[in-house]
Amino acid sequence: MIMNHNNTTLDICNDNLSYDTSVLASKIIWYISGVFWLWCVNMSFIKTDPRHVLSCGIFYCILIGSTTLSNLYLASISIDRSIMILCPMRYRSIVTRPHAICRIILICLVITLVLIPHYFYLHYDAKAILFLCNFTSSNNRQRIHFISLIHTILFVSIPSLIVCISSIILLNNRRQHKRKHKRTLSLNARRMHKRSVLIFLLSLWFFLSLLPAFIVEIFVLYDRFFYDDIRCSIRLKIYKILYNCFLIFSSINYSTKFYIRLIVSTSFRESFIQFICCQNHKKSSGLIKMNNKNKNKHRLLPLLNQNKANVIEI
Image (cartoon, rainbow, N blue to C red):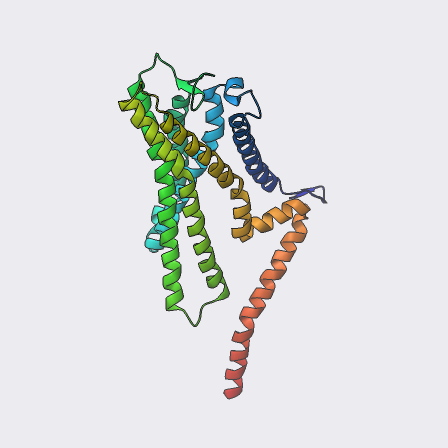
């Protein structure tokens, strides 16, 4: 950023870039530290559980709230991308800034009203066998189970399924474009095709990494509805294995998002390099202008050569 005051210039690193990168890094660090703390407690390396220090409601809201928000935002962006592919003539009237802002506000309201109160029905119990957080006995259990089912379907399975379907639509579009323009396929089109394959594989991995949580929720709900007083040791072992798999997969999923974005997105990679090197905005803008001039020259040279040839023929 360049600040002008009394004909003087002061070069400062880009504040927006540092803010976005720091927010992303803080989310990753917080999530990994929370999951690692849970894993250490599960492996008996640490005796103090984080849910006992904070509370079950605050801990799960901080740990899972950011993940749920990112999944819903990613699903919303995937829907917009699918609309752009399927309806190229009408997407400008459908995908607008007011619609995007309304969706962001709606997602925040849904999570605030549905997700956050659900976790405050939990209380820490050191004698609990599975999750160390039990439902309070004074609350209506059927209502709590119904909210758990809504959370499983609405916040876990549907967003990941939307992302998978959107990635399939994108991959199909890139394949059709490759078949039509097989001989005249540009370098950017080939890169986009490779990225569409990578996006499909990543979305499939994200969906499979969330499946253990979905299976655990369904099993727990089924047992609490129909076998509330029965304690089966085999079922509890299955629940623990699935829960540990969910912790491992979700930690890998969330910790690699930054690196995946760094590999896939060219603009994000350039911004991150600029942030790390603390490059001058004036120099970077000058380099961008020089690159644009060179591109324009390369585009105009064939046209100028054609015009010269036409003049000579005349």
